[in-house]
Image (cartoon, rainbow, N blue to C red; front, side):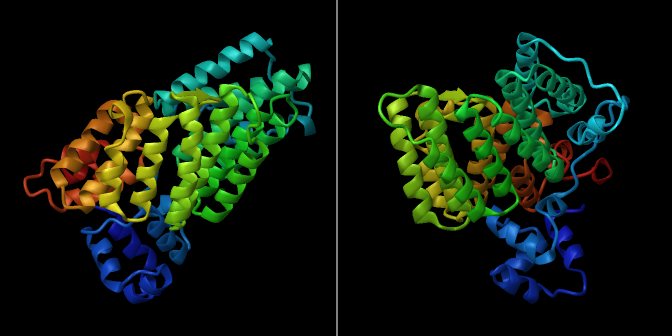
Length: 394
């Protein structure tokens, strides 16, 4: 089977030795040997350093994202790229039909609904036409709200494309979303889009830049006096994003300090919120604190922090619950608790759904390590479902 370890070995080829890769990535040669042998799982920041040393992306190392042809030339990844790079203003081609603001709002709400249920394949079919229609609506009405709705659809497209391992069109989508948000009248939407830019930088391994972007947005939205819950949620969420970026950059003390600052706003809210399609509240503080510890390979601290989750995480969205379980599984696997880690991964699959789980890089990495301890082939069907093993390996 082609695992993370074999992909790293193939990527370095004969030009870079294990010792050379270890030096470039700032780890030991024995660590690289264990990763290539499949018995050690690197944290996300370390995996990013390995990818940078090999001049490839993390997606290249964890495996290609599966394609899902729709049978429709106006749908799918290629059509989505085309919708994000229009040329109708340079030709005589007719622009898509526009919608009323109420109709546009329904289109955006429907698309976000599919996203939160992890229905990425459906979104690749629906988003190309949705983007074109919302763009036409914004151009023809020139109302601030129309530009905000178009920005929202682009923001959604960017999030989807990141999950599908398509960073270049995702970047086009989110930068265009920011341009459109600035044509509207909602500074909190603009701040949220800036936060999504920070998330993309985080995924790219640009941790310091990610932190700078989101903390500047947090500074620009700092609540003063009596403000809405939306304002508190957006500001607190940006601080928490800054904490995660600091954690990925191995600046643990700074990360935990930022998480503590975000926690003060979560306490002021006193509940879980999801404004501007972004989750924030007490549960998110615990979830991201666990992420900070996992990223820093502080696995005991991660499991300890997870015990503080309010109501066991039941107040979080299903996607957040699934992602939190994967973080805990990573910690458990690295502590040698293989059965516990497997149970958490299977629960994450059940909660998030088989389609969503296929796009969770950390889950695939944890499962790859667990396979090496699978003496009775109990994991192989699960590994096939999420793409760690092909059907020919069964």
